[in-house]
Image (tube, rainbow, N blue to C red; front, side):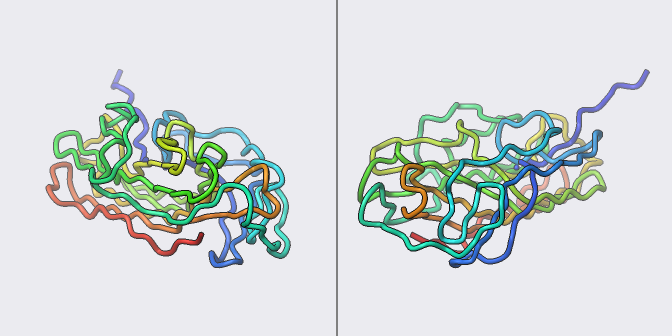
Amino acid sequence: MPATRSPLVPARATAEHLASRLSGQTLFDFGRVPIEVNRDLWPQDATGEVAPVTADLPTGPQGVHRQGIDVQGGAAGPAEAMDVTSGPHVDSITMVTSATGAAGGYPAKEDLCGLTLNTPGPHNDTLGGSVANVHQVHFHLDRGKSSQLLSKRVVDRTAAGRGQTFSKKGDDGPPLHEIKTPTDDKLVVADAPGWCRPDIKSGDFPLTYHGDFILAVYDPLNAQTGQTAMIKYSVDISKSKIDDPSPTNTVSVKSTKV
């Protein structure tokens, strides 16, 4: 009997409806939406995921509805006025793409292809074939504590490999193991989207990955009127063959809002 291959998986999570504009009008609906997956081949989005999502999406944190963001499972109404004079406040957002300035404390081996979130930068395995973009988003606070904030990330992703295309829109965590609060004035969310598998074969190439992300942080105790800080960025990966020495592997910030 021939050996059964494990599914080939690009690294990032699943879900439903990602909407239109970022600046003051962005609308997300995190209601329950059935997810259909190909049982033989499915995309993995967040680091550490080893199985496809087969159930309905859980409803997100309740009562978060301002700046046009709604994670209550219903349609968002007009953006509400913010009171940014109390509670934690983010004054800057930085995308970290190298070891310089990176936060530590993550496992030395985070994912299925041996990368670590401690060391941002392009990951390319010319022997095993894996390719991923490791990066960290740093939210700096000028008031309050980083431990008071919650985070929410969504993705609009198209990936291709082994002759198949995978498109997903919606919830992308982030999972708890990607979040660190190294100091009271800093919250860090790390990630490594791409193709991160131990069993990638030569015939699976070319591999491509394009993901548009929005990552937001907010104070759940001041959800109606507090600040929502967010960053919009894109990840692009293209690898032609298993030993490609210089694949396209970039992350680019489109906008930030504090």
